[in-house]
Image (spheres, one colour):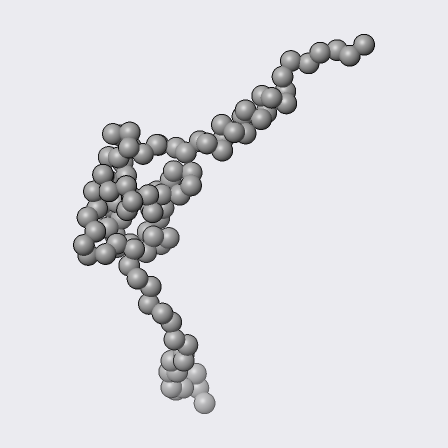
Amino acid sequence: MDKSKQPFHKSKRSFRRRLPPIRSGDRIYYRNMSLISRFISEQGKILSRQVNRLTSKQQRLITIAIKQARILSLLPFINNEKQFERAESILRTTGPRTRSK
């Protein structure tokens, strides 16, 4: 039997449809911090559409809301907590050295 003549077989695996991250009642607004914070990584970066499972229109609105919140100081531009902790530990270990006699 040719491959071109074989009937198309659907896979029998079932999958659970994921719920959309933004419901129809949710308003994408820069003050809605509980909604906006779900779309930001630990470093403070905006997550991509593929990770968020958003439509392109929703992603644009989320991006605008996040940028407005950052400008109004509701959100940090970068989350540097780990970098500050690391810098402090380096400063502690590389302090002024004294000679031992």
